[in-house]
Length: 279
Image: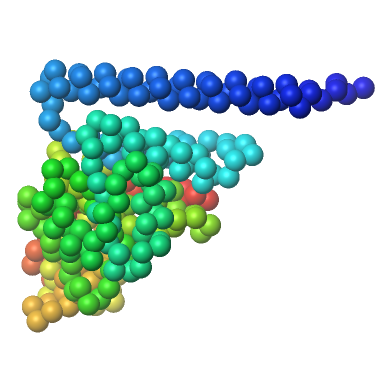
């Protein structure tokens, strides 16, 4: 004989109990964040509150846990909002978002990853986002990876050492059925620590672009993210593993007869993580 199912009233009481535990844990987490702020202030730490390395590690662990009856989107979204809001309580910031490719997708991406506490600031295009972040005291910027060809080599706005740099590629967990799967870059003013330096993004100038160069990049585990030609040659935005040196990358392009004349690092992010196919 199987045991009788618990009464519905008892099950609801259990849900209420768990809700209380979750709320208490969030309050406790907030208190610890407050202690982190105090410890940083006492140590004279004026570094960035953003920690892309810790966020990427957390998100990998979260999405790989068995979600039970929950769709994977729920814990991913919940933890992203917890982290983003905790950062906001340390140092208030805004997210400047590029609306040139449409409002809905970029707005949904921002809200999924940063929640509703962090202010959303619309911008005309990626160049406007870069300018806004550069002029801010600690804001973030977000724009689509597949920028309009009319903007040309938009990433050159990230080349100057003091210019904003790419710190993340979202979503962290890529999958075909992601509810906000729009690939976006997140930028911030330059920071010296807390970066997820698994994938390096570089602005490369080459005298030309040839198909064999794609094969040379693929052999290194690198990818051509964007390109734009001008009278002086080919401007390339390349993502490559941190294990591949700048010299190794430029040598590969040289071997493909696309002699590079310049390599400038413009950011980094966590290694792309695709559910179902490994990292």
